[in-house]
Image 1 (cartoon, rainbow, N blue to C red):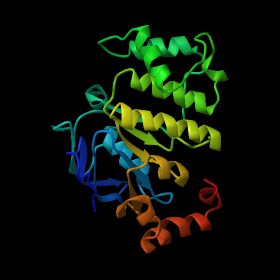
Image 2 (cartoon, rainbow, N blue to C red):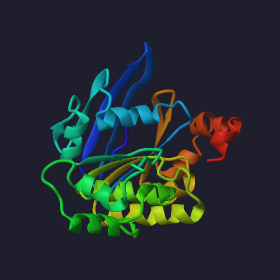
Image 3 (cartoon, one colour):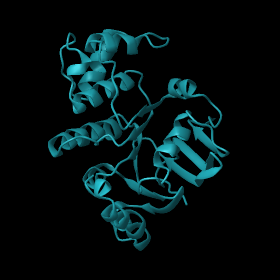
Length: 253
C-alpha cells in the first residue's frame, strides 16, 4: 500500500521494498513516496520494521528486491555516501556525538567531511535554522539530548539536503523541547521545502507536523492517510495502540 501527494510529483519514492535478514522476512513489499516540503510520518509497534526500512532507504542496507528513486535517479544500489551527496540526510534514535570534541571542532569536521569544503558561515546558517546557540568552546559531552540533536541536525543542514530521514527525533525530549522540535521541522519543510520522512511514537508531534501518516506492522504497510483517519482505523488500533497498552515501555512514549 502506498500514498502520494497529489499536488506534487514525488521527490523520493520506494516501490515494493523487501528485505530478509537471517532467513527471516523483515520487509514484505513496502512502497512510499514523499514530495518536496512534505512530511510523511511512520508509526508502528516495536518490531514493525520501521528502522530497517530507514536502513534500506538511506543506503546502509541493500534490499532483497524493489526500487528506490530520488530526484529522478535510481538509487536502489547506490551507497550511503553517494546518497548523502545527492541530498539525503539521516538522523538516528540516539544522538551520538564525539564527546571529546568541542562544538567548533565538530562543525569543522562536518564542513571538511568531503568536497566541496564548507565555511564557518555554513555552520552559522545551519545553527540558526535549528536555533542551536552554544559557544564553540563547549565540549559535546556537556550537551543535553535536545542540543545534541540540534548539533547533528545543523551539521546535516549545512550540506543543503533535499530529504531528511528522521528516526524518533522526539525520543528523550520533554514537552517544551518537542514544541521546539516542532517549530524547527515546520521551518525545514514549509520554508526550505525539505521533504521529511519521520519515524515517531509521539502522536502530538505527528499531529502538528505530518501531512500523511503510514502505519507499519510486521514488515508491511497496513494503512496510509491523514492522522485523524489513521487513529480511527480498527487495524491500526489493533496493531499499534493495543500493542502499546500491552507494552509499558511503548505506552509511555
